[in-house]
Structures are given as structure tokens and as C-alpha cells.
Image 1 (cartoon, one colour):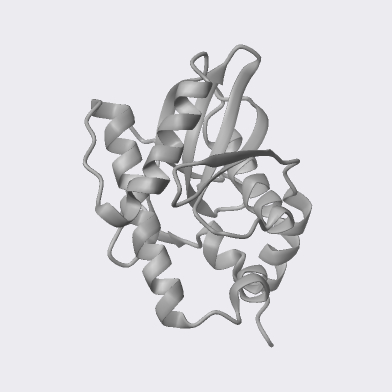
Image 2: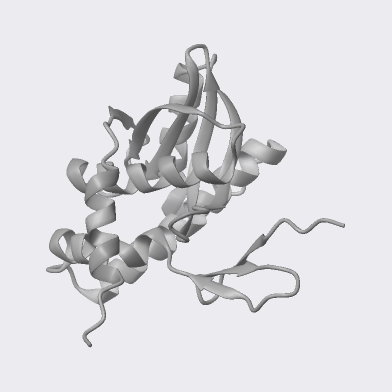
Length: 201
């Protein structure tokens, strides 16, 4: 009998739940929830309507990329087409990078947080984690924190994966892309996690 805990994800509520046979389910905080103070500093001045529209477009772009990588067909909404073309251009420019996972869900077995990373590639030098962004401005320090959480969480949940590099693929409406090599920052994520877990006595 398989007694390994199962990570469940409710897409509507964006909620991660750890299911263990014979035990009560545990709701796990997401990387996004834990990083909310940093997100507020980066995006706090932008209207909720614009943020919601950008998040919706990003979700549809990620779904289109996942379908393309898994099944080879292109089903792209018009407002996502330029961004999608940027992803295709990146893939064409890196033919020796083989996607091994897209939309990879994980949880950290020690710290008990969860997340979904965009892309894992097997490259000639090892496995590289790539996060896909559509923002116009780079947020390198914040991205480093997110990638630190992803890298540590994935390696903790899957002993077969050792990530040797973390990068951000920033795509634009014009069909272009920029690839950033980023040193992941897990220490700042742990600081955010401490704040997230703080409860007034």
C-alpha cells in the first residue's frame, strides 16, 4: 500500500493540501503567500484590476506553454500570443535544453510549504529550473527569493532531482525574451516564512 503523502491542489482557491492516509489533511502555505510582503513592495502601487488581468493572462500563457511542451499543439489566446512566441524563440535558441517537467508541484518536507515551478530542463550541464515571467520590469532580488524557495522545495520533495542553476525567462508582447541567470536566495525566503508564521500571543 502506498503511504506516501499526496499533495493536492485546488486551482479555484489556489490551495495546497497535504493528504496523509489515516491523518487529518494539512493545508500548506504557498510560496506566493509567504512572499506577500515582498510582492507588496514590488507591486503595491499597481491597481488590483491591472494585477488581476496580468495574473489571468499569465495563467493562460502558462497553460498554453504546458500544453505545447506535453502534447505539441498550440492553443494560444490572442493576448498571450506575443509572450508565447517569446517562449518558442527561447526553445528554438536552446535545442539542447530538454524539458523534463512543466507546472511541477512540490512541497518541502521539512518546512511544509508548497508551490508550482514553471519549467525544469535537463541541459548538458545538469538540471536547470526556469521560471516564466511576463512583467515589463525585472525584479531580480524578489525573483531570487522565489527561486530559492522553489529549488529547496523541489530538492527536498524529490531526492532524484539536483538543480544546478536557476533562471528567469522574461518574455514580452513583442515575441522576444530575456534569460536571467539568478543566484537563488533561500535565506530571505526563510525570513519571510518566519514573519508568515508569527502570531501575536
